Length: 128
Image (cartoon, rainbow, N blue to C red; front, side, top):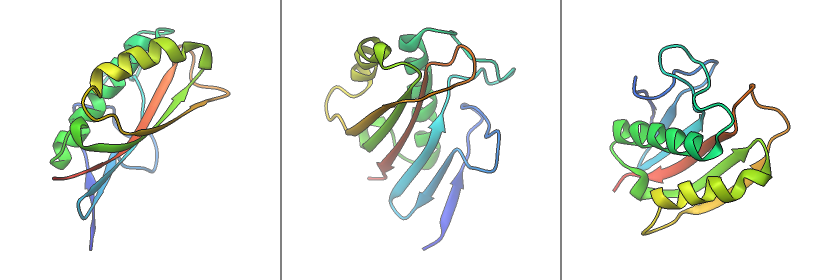
C-alpha cells in the first residue's frame, strides 16, 4: 500500500515539512488545520473560537473532498483550544458540523498559539 499526499488550494498551505493530509488505503489522516487566510496567512477572526471552529471545519471538509470523502466519514477528531474556557462556544459550532454521527473526539488546551488563534483541529476519516 502506498501513501498519497492530499492537497487542495481551498485550505491553508502547509507551513512546514508536512502535508495537509495523507491517504493510505481507505483512510485519510488530516493534519492540524488552522484558521489562516488562504492568501495572506493571517489568523482569521482573531479571538473568536466559534468562527475559527467553523473556518477550520470548512477547510477540513475541503481537504477531505480532495481525498474522496467528507466530514460525514470522520471517525476521530483531535481539537486543540487555546483556552478551555472557550469549549462551550467551540462545541456549539462543532456540533453543527457533526449532527448525525459524531466522531470520537479528544479536546486539549494548548499553551501557546499564534496571537489571536483559538482553534486547531486534526482528524481521521474513511473513504466509503
